Image (cartoon, rainbow, N blue to C red; front, side, top):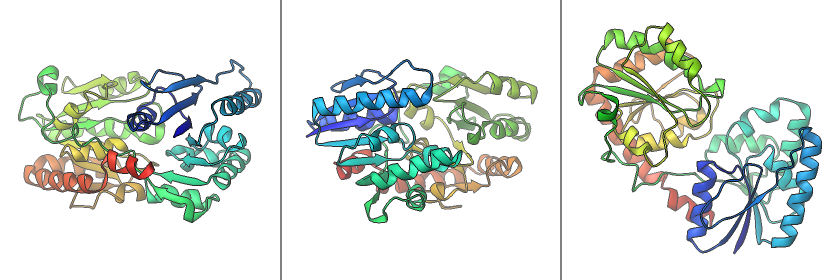
Length: 352
């Protein structure tokens, strides 16, 4: 089968998805304005160099239509509702699959009347809509997607790599004692709704109560300079490690070396990093968002707090540091939950 994708190039979500279908023997093409090589994939650059967005979108749409005519795929699969979704819907190509990601549903369509109308047009045009949580698909239905066309398909977890005994020397590399509690945050530095500032706010109070605790901050996007300065101003010290972007190949080692995983955004779909942390046996503290609570049962497979509630977050982290038995219990249940429901290859096989 020949599959054409419209998606963000150079992104781990795109790469993992496309690599699976290449592995299955399909002829995979990627049309993108962020071209980056993916082994086995034919990448088509649709950049225009035009700064004025309306004209950029119009010229790129002509390129999308031309490329689709030339390669004649069996189907078009677009990732990300806004931007790439516009090109997918207005290309006129069918079958047309739409996979929504997160803020492309929760935030961008509500920023203006035009963006809302375009998003609804895309969802109406799609022959199939997939998303990584029931909650995000419910939002898609509210914007016009047909319920019978919506299916939960997860990015999923590579169960062979993400496991509690994933090998690595993270603690040794960062100078963290073997028995010291480690709290990790790995969300993007670019978007304020990930609330990294709230996590930074609790570092010093937690370390005051538990001086042996180390915090690791990583982000797959953006610069951490402002957060480093914020941490310094609030009294964090050498036990707080800003490690930048962690290569995905090293990510299991960082998660397996951590005791507590914190992710407290104000909006989110199912975070892949959350599922990967659960697969590695970390005890997790998450926002009490509907998408997170599809995976985390309070007191059974993790703890949940309101977004931007620093006091509740501090108490949850301290509670876990105080109780190794609770951390172990939550971590074990988290592993069972993810292994039973979030295998990457199982979901990709469903997609196929």
